[in-house]
Length: 259
Image 1: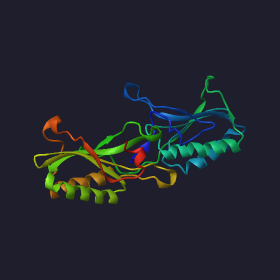
Image 2: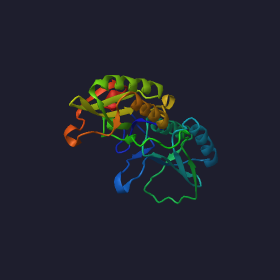
Image 3: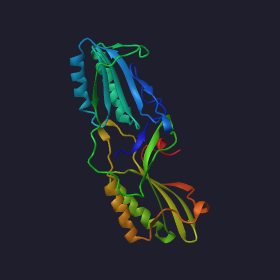
Image 4: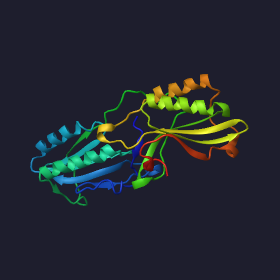
């Protein structure tokens, strides 16, 4: 799974500028849909253009691409519930191809009848489904440049005397499991503590995409329950809900992750 900085509700202001593509924000809840980068164009030789586009796609294996085709007209869509940096970089590369091919930008408000389609799926890692129920995958509120962040969240509690050693062991697991952001929120009480742990990564660019094996990570966290008196979930209700922090242990791209 890819964790880290992404965009869904708003465009990444100040980071990317497009001549052709338009950003269509996602809508959560009952109207749930992907965010998309979309362009409608016309080229002289559609078959040749698609071949070149497919060659470009081989460099962006983690990006989703969909084409609607009508003769020499084409609607190109890059879409996902998490648009990472590499998706926007892919769109920029497509724009360079459009310029080289002298593509004509068309009015997207004019009705378009799709005669054929092509879909290029994301290359997925064969990690299997998440086997650990204590792992939650959570988003965040908007950060710098409208960024959001996809993180692992784990709620747990343990004796206060074990907290420092437990946190240090978690940092070691992060380094082993391709995670470079780790922070937590706590509430200490009666020689015990409730913890809300967050694990994620920074911006995911084309040549530095990080994938996390949730099952491998979760198995190592579970092993710590044999070393410490760690229990998943919180004790004593809302009165002792974790509110102190965040306490940062590992961080990159901080302005896109923390307030």
